[in-house]
Image (cartoon, rainbow, N blue to C red):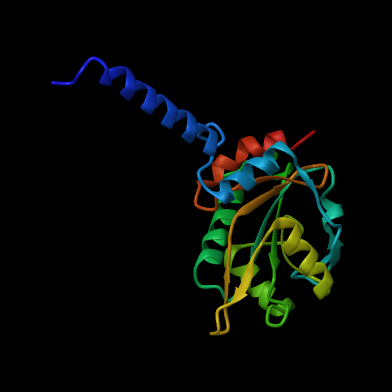
Length: 204
């Protein structure tokens, strides 16, 4: 039989453990360092470098070209057989499921970090695989190594050669708001329609 003295003690331990968990997870909102980073970006959007890029049609532009409307960004390499395909499918569905009005409000930008292999032809073929056409959905690459390094650092994208010609890299869908700031980090495994509230909030 449980003693009367044990019940208050048990309640205290449960309450203390719950409070500690809530503190560790920012009120139960995050459980990983990636989640903590996403929450910090949501609270304090980050300015981004205005790096020059070249798209699959050979047009040079920069992130600053999107000022005034939000853009969803992912980082890929065109030979990736796994997560990049998931990202491509997500972007394809995001456009297919949006109406004409939504299409006028946001753009998509896939940035390749494989400057050695992802030339214009490779990026164009990748875009054709998913029905990407510029300027609505650009498949782009930085024009130089310094620009690539600046973008990877700003978005906190980690890219490691896998020793077999490919790369190990973290993945997410990044929302750059109409002011040109990194405003949200979205789960690439989530349904595309989950980005809609974030897109609406990104328009001033």
